[in-house]
Amino acid sequence: MGERSDRAPLLDWEEVQSAEKSTGADSKDRLSSPSNSRGLSGSSASGLGWSGGPGGPDGCGTPPATSITQKGADGTLRPDALVHPPDSGPGDMPLEDRIVTWEEKDQIVSVFVVTFNTRTGNMLEWCLPKDMDLEGVEFKAIASGSHRVTTDFIYFRKGSYFGLACFANMPVESTAERGARMKSVGILSPSYTLLYRYMSFLEHQVRLQLQFPGHYSPLEAFYEDKRALLLPSGNDVISVCPINAWGAAINHSMHPEMKITHPAGCMSQFIRFFGEHIMVLWKLALLRRRILIFSPPPVGVVCYRVYCCCCLANISIPGVGVAVPEFRPFFYVNVADISALENELSYVACTTEKIFEEKRDLYDIYVDNQNVKTYKEGLKPLLRISNADREKYRKLTEQRKMLLYSQEENGDCVSSEEDLFILFFLEQNNRIFQTLSEVAGSPDPTLTAESVRAMGLDPHGDRLFLLHLLEIYGFDTLLVSDQLCCS
Image (cartoon, one colour):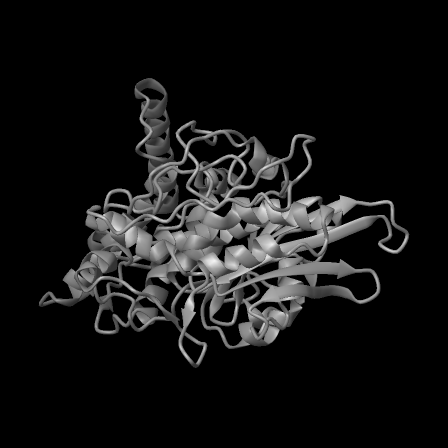
């Protein structure tokens, strides 16, 4: 793969419109359906850090309901202008609406402020609750190298929780602060699929902290309104859901990474950035390999790639993949996470620290810009693009063109590229494992060139991938025809 800049294709994600300029109306939250698996179809509000303009690139987005803030008459931020949207009442609303209300509420376990001190470096300035274990969060909320950017947002993991922090760097006339004040405001939650809802709030609060250091009352009110109920052990979150809603909730929650709503164009950027090599990442994700993505700051756009990689490995056939390691997103990691990554069998993460490339025992695949590399000899053949890979990429490209044409000509704002992308790989994965299950249950459990083509794979170019797949997913009863020789 040729070396290209990591910056140019992603500039539109960095030109974040401030929350105060957002003019879209609140959209009605709803659960996804099987044909539209994301939590908020096409929602991408300006000011949320998801897109470069109102409604997102496809013009179909509307902002979700979030806490908002106001400015005074002089245009400065008002620290006392925090407004929370009213909670939905328990009236005779549809079941889906009740489930969404249950999922959205009481999910924040901590809120915190991190600052950069010229003498001591990153430090935790303030947090709620006071007894929360936030050791190391100061290095997650302000990524290494962030002093070179003015704003950023960071997804990360902290123990069993997921975090989102918004960072800002403001010039100040202060010798003690060396001309710059840097802070980050973040939250922790049991699920990363809901964190995006608070992006606008965090963006505003970090600017507020830069202009009015030490004013924590909006954060205190936010925590009291959104905090989760913890069990005495502090390890789990108590979620209250009507008993008769569990069935529908489980159906809609089978694939949590499919419910997250990222910016309109997130998947489109991912596809354009990697091109047909997205098929290489797809195979590695399906094989549950440890994937580490390097990029200099800003790190927010790279966290999107972590999410996109996770979407490549979705399988919805019951029982398939139960015994394989869970393909989990770690999002941003730094040197403090080395010990945690040493114990992980499968993950996808991103970092701004180049030293990770030397820690070859921590990862199987290292992604630097568009370059997908491995130092494991047994995996190097998997980086080659097969004929079937090119054919799948061609089909994906054609489907995208048809969707874009439909959006332009017919004003189709229901379908999105994110849905198309996720369902494309979900169907491909299901096709593979459905075929494997059928062959395994046949009188002659032998994979022939014909059955491999039925999976959408190349009998020659994908032979090694197929052998790895059989081993990892436990199809050890299957035989491979001698006709499937290496190319």
